[in-house]
Amino acid sequence: PSQPPSAPSAPSASIAMAMWKIAAALMVAMAAGHGEAPSHAGCFVSNGTTMLAVKLTYDGYKFDIPGGCTNGREPATRTAERETFEESGYQVSIGELLTTVRGGFQIYKCYLQGSSPQKGPDHEVSQVRWMDAGEIDAHLQHHEWRYQDQQAYLYLDWLLGKENNPHRRLMVQV
Image: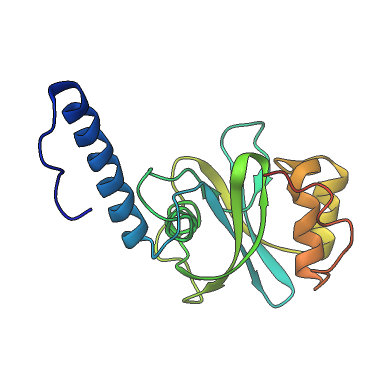
């Protein structure tokens, strides 16, 4: 809709105007995200044989990938990019969508845009670490990953290049 509808009768005028405003807001949101809806999201970032992990200052001080909540207007890819920078200090570019898990949280394959962080982690993070497969597995064995059963097991598969693991899709929840 490019302009509001003409004014019909009083009750239907307010409904029509409300619908026009909703449609206009959706068009702006879709245009800003190139057709991508807002969503909570995070980044799986690997650098050779290691992956980027953050240790949280809440939720049991567990490890997780950088990620978090949308601001309600930005597309999921922008949420993943912004949250990764806020939590780890690393700037990334967004690659493919790897999976969607618990409550629609989207995990993207992300790529470093520099070899060192541009800032320190935010208040939600006590540690930023690069973990190899052995460390990831050790933390899995000690139940030190947030969302351990829902998604953390995927990180090891992705790091080792096992994207087509048949068990990968069993735990995905939309």
